[in-house]
Image: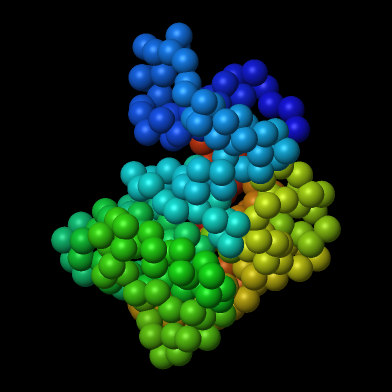
Length: 266
């Protein structure tokens, strides 16, 4: 695996800073220091793993997301900046001082649920995932961050929350097509396929979520779905057909359609 020079330097600095338990800025001020043999051996072992394609997040066992430092393993998706856009949109719809019931579907590391809980002390947050191993990581992250008031349930989408309704449902579901060539490239090779791909067109999970969400939304409740950059038209059609109002799509930092939202009429 080849990296652009800047990317390679940044990743090497991240690995070395973690190894030495120091900020990256410290490395610049000590760039002529010599590593001890044990540290040097471990560092070059990490570099070798990265050169063989293993994600930096897996090597370090963590990834920064929002303002949080999350434990990451091969049992979960690696949290990405695009999903921070979903968190921003969710927070825009959640009042600071009034309670609200929030559901994170397919929580993985717990990134969305924990980011929302960290910003909205009055929110009652539930996070679900069908994978028990992912839930174990999410619970570990909640404990590390002191956000144990988040409720975690093992659930195939809505299966374990029958009869419950929420003011806001947020989700970053699998949205790649089963034969998408990207699944064999880069970091995606090391992430759980069931959390990445969903049916021939990548939209099976989103179809299911949009069809079922109205039964779990309170009056004027919001549904927010992260999706692929070329799927905005399809997701808007799903929501409009299902009866959602105020359907629209927000773009990510690169100007690509990334999160579609809709309001369930009261």
